[in-house]
Image (cartoon, rainbow, N blue to C red):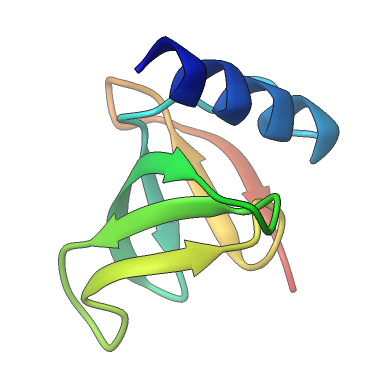
Length: 80
């Protein structure tokens, strides 16, 4: 698991979202999800809870995404 976290942190830094963490709540195109990891495309793996994206998806860290802290406060938003 540490290797997964290191890879995730490296991708987050490279993609300009060093604050991103596994388990963080995000929203993309109005669909609510949770960051669960990263992948070989230098993107994040997100499990969406609802909407047309429901399920596991490969998501660019800077494309139409909002990041929320543990209190649900918006901390960053990217357009597309």
